[in-house]
Image (cartoon, rainbow over the protein chains, first blue to last red):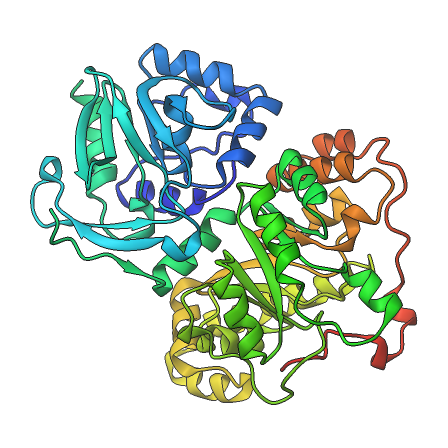
Amino acid sequence: MQGAVREHRNMLHRLGVETVDVLNPQDLDGISGLILPGGESTTVGKLLIRYGLLTPIAEAGRAGLPIFGTCTGLILLAKHINHSRQPSLGLMNACVERNAFGRQLASFEADMPIPALGGKPFHTIFIRAPYIEKVGEEVTVLLRHEGKILFARQGNLLAAAFHPELTDDTRIHEYFLTAQTSR
Amino acid sequence: MSEVKKETGTFAVKKGLAEMLKGGVIMDVVTPEQAKIAEEAGAVAVMALERVPSDIRAQGGVARMSDPEMISGIQQAVSIPVMAKARIGHIVEARVLEALEIDFIDESEVLTPADEAHHILKSEFKAPFVCGARNLGEALRRVGEGAAMIRTKGEAGTGDVVEAVRHIRQVNSDIQRVVSASPMELMAIAKELGAPYELVVQVKALGRLPVVNFAAGGIATPADAALMMVLGCDGVFVGSGIFKSDNPAKRAKAIVEAVAHYADAKLIAEVSKGLGEAMRGQSVAQMEDREKIAGRGW
């Protein structure tokens, strides 16, 4: 809808997955998974409400549709957003802090080891990123750094505070695809 | 995990923020109240400045970087990214904006240029920059200096979209030429465009600019904004077009929706209803060359 849609689409095409852009509720028909890309969370939240997508996506998520949220997408997945009345899907049992690292000057990239992916560390890019402060016990933490949860899974839901779509590394997208089929 | 090395201010991080703004609208605001209206309407970022381009045009005089107090006020009013303009070549204005922790600096021809020969070496800064361009050569020169985002120059403050269309058409046709050229021809094209060779090679490989490209300069209606998206822009800057119109909140919201759903003419028809009068504007075809600002910078 708004944000890094193209990069996620390219990633999925590289992995041989067909994609559709979801702009209206009818676009949700027949999809087997959904990615909520990074963008500006206030903008995306408003557009989801104006076009009647918030409720159908939340219902689909509760019914088991695999959903992967990056950055803004992570904020939208969470049940609690600190200091904000920002609309959310309220699916993942997590408390999220928006713009948690500060303004753009604090945005950073770093190699972080993510055991669930195996192999070499993942090159993470954080852009005015949020983090998860705490999670309920049904949530598996996949990456924690300096006490901040940056990558997590709850059943059919996957959330990253950083942007795997801005790298050439397809491991996280593959993880999302295999996690959904092996559930 | 304390051995993890974090790097800030890298090109990937600068370009990354621009990527997150795609499909969105960036609005010029002159007060914290306007910034809140823009955020409420769904803007992805605001551009904090003292006078919108149409006022700069009408009032004349030297246009400079805005008062830091005003910029800070806007930064405190909203949670979306805040951008601000520095004069072309004015290294210190850019450093001041960076010290204010601005999210994006626009090295802008809308302000009176401080240097007629040199643009800021933007790679030396931690803050990302956006710059105007009229063609591929100009865009790649700015990227070569470190710009993380490009916008068409258009003709700011006119409410006339014709120049923005001209500039994106030119960029697109230059890109087509690079894409269809053989590798052997690229150096000659780079020479002709006055563009760094390595970036021309990148354009051929990617089939587009190596950074995000927004539309700017003269966009006044939801249909104007959607037109720029149809022509291949990644998003839209709206300057005077919103707060110089009858109903800024409604128009701002309509433009946001038209950009997100630019291919949906029915929806654009719906959101365009009853917006009141657009900014009055000024036809570029009737302007003298010296009145135009797109010629500033090279």
